[in-house]
Every structure is written in C-alpha cells, then in structure tokens.
Figure 1: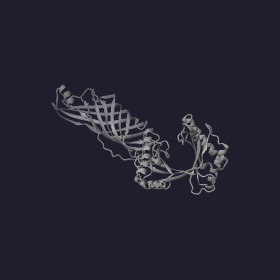
Figure 2: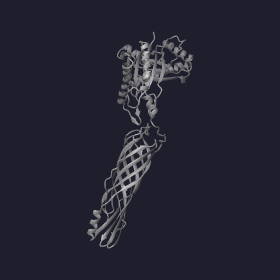
Figure 3: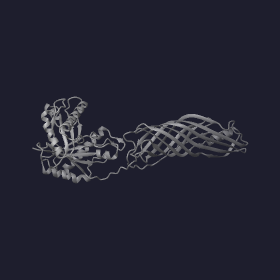
Figure 4: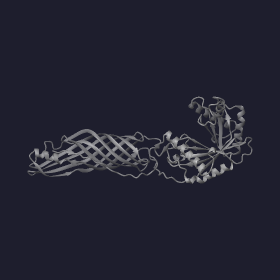
Length: 480
C-alpha cells in the first residue's frame, strides 16, 4: 500500500523592469494559448508506508523514493481585460514511485501517475509595460493511476493497478515577461490538490517555464526610448469672428463679408488650410451645444466651398460647444460673444490684399513631457528664453500656457482627475520658469488645464502618448 503526502513549494523569481510598448492597447480582450514544461515535486510519506508494513507483520530496512519528475501542461484562455483572464488546460504531473525493502526479506514497490484538466481564474498585476505578476485559483479534475508489486515475503495488494478520479482545488503564482505584443514568457509555481489511489489526499507542486501566444496581436513591441526632440513651433492666425443669435446656425448677410476675407486669403495663399471652429454659450445641455457648434462650423465650411470655391479638402469643421468661452456666460454680452465662429489658418508674413486686418495672431510652441513628469526639460530652456525675449520686446503681448496629458501611460489608463491635475502642474511649471528664470510678470501669463480632452494623437501608440503630454504656449497679439 502507498500514500503520498505533498509538501508546499515556493518559487522566487526576480524580473528586470524594462519599459516598452504595451501589448494591451485599445482592445484589451483576446484569445491566447500556450504551454509550460518543468518539474513536479512530491514527498513520499515514509511513515505511512512503515505503518502499513508493520500492520502486516513487517518492518522496512530501507525506503528509496523517486519524488520528482518532468511535468507539462497545455492551456488556452480568454483575456477579459487588463487584469483578468479565464484559462482552461490539460496537465500531466508525471510519475512518482518508491521501493521498500522489508524484514523478513521482501520488497514492496509502488508507482503513481497523475493527469487531468483544469479551469482557472487568472488575475494580472502589471509591473510595467512588459513585466507582470499574476496569480491563479481554480479547480482540477485529476485521474490517478497506481501500480503496485511485491516480492519475497511481502504480498501485494488485491488490486495492483488501482485508479482514482477526483475534483479538487488548484492555485498558483507566476511572472510574465512580454517578448512582443503576441508572445510572452511565463515562470510559474502551482499546487494541485489530488487523491491518491489508496484513500489519501495531498498536494503536488509544479514549477515550470512556458510560452503564451496571443491571437490577433502580431504588432511587434517597440522599445520606449525617450529621445530629445527638436522643439516644434506652430504659427497660426485667427482672422474671423462671426457671432450667432441664440440657438441659430444660419450665417447672416452682414457676416458673409467676413467670409469673403477668408476666401480672399485662401485664394491668395493656395497652400494654406483652415480649421473652422464653432462655439456656443452655456445655455442648454452640453450635448446640444456641442452639436449646435458643429452645425455652425459646418455652415461656414459649406458657404466657403459652395459660394467662394474653396476646395473642401482645405477646410475642417470642428465644434467645441461651450468648452472654450472667451467671455462671462453670466451676462447677456458674454453669452453673445461666446456664440461665435473662428477660422484658424496657417499664418503668412505677407497679408497684403486683405481688407480686414487679422483680429488676433497666435503662435503655439509645443513642449513634450515624460510620463507623470511636470518638470520643464532643459532642452526647452533656449526656446523659453526666446519666449521671454519676445514678451519683453512687446509689453502688450500676453501668453496663455495650456497643459495637456495623455489618456494612457503605456497600457495603463490615466483617470480624468489625474490627467487634469498633471496638465495643470505642467502649465504652472512653465509659468514659474518664465517668472523666476526669465523675469516675466506673472500678470501677463495665464494657465489652463485640459487634461486628456484635447489629444492630438491616438494614445494606442507610445509616440502618440508622447505627443499628447505637452504644453502649448499661446501668444496673443491685439491689433489696433
């Protein structure tokens, strides 16, 4: 007779945290499959064997045990989201055996083989973009096959090839390192609760390495390398200011003369493009105002295309609703000012031929930040010195510093609150630099935080995330 009692095992693995592109991006759900191979470990219960021999009138002189073997498992699963997956698999824990030599002279030999299937819930905890810890808990249905034999004075059991099937728990922990978006390397320590063939229960420990393949995720992982970039500057002009009556999107006759200015400008400079911005006051719901402002912008685009023969691919209509007021919505005059259209087009230095001087000219300088960082990088010091020089040369210039954030850092989502907070800190850091290092009066500087609401690129790629972590400095010129 034989009984196996299993011991606890722990696997300690150290991982190197390397920042790379995320494997889980816009779509966090997918199917995967894989396999592990490693070693299973059991402890042969020598005391139990001795008791059984003594009960039969024998004592054992030696017990030789083979308590480890190669083991493997095959699995498939469905990733529900970043943190949870359901996984099913087949496992073979190998074979364990012992040989007891007895007095009076004889031997008792026992072997056990363990195979089965399992269903687990797996929880993941990302450490960085490439490295995750995970834990699993589930059920296993195992078949235990025994083989017993004896010699000499020892008589074997009545059934020398007993079998047993039973359902028990299983649990485990592991680490996963993503070689690419589609392939990952796993190291695991698992415990399987099983029944032996003689009425006992215990645990078999399995320590293994394996690979996992994710279906439909073949895009390769690209390393996240922070490379100093050349400071980008954008220059654009706003040369249109059309206001609307409450809840109206129809262009009045007197406003069409202003649109003729846009037409003249774009015909004179055929390489320019324009973004027609629609805005509203805060009367009504935000959703209604957003749609209303979009209709206002589109009506201007339609007029420029149909009446002034501007190519439609040079024009873009964008509705901002009530999100960008330029006046106080608590007053009638403020509401009127906020119900408006602006045309933002690429600036040129020669504006001869236009009958209306631009009402406002702005220049935007883009500054990028590392994830969760708010400190102004030294690479921007020279550009900020130029900003200060420009503002000192013309005391009438004011600057609005706009802070922005990405919606993700790697594969981790950034909350609206955190994005707004960090974008505000970035804008304040730039203002503090201009005040403390360049001597610009704080009264001439303002800050605005937009969080992740005005992304310029998709957050599904690291390059897009980098472009969204930015500060824009807007210089305002008021012409007389």
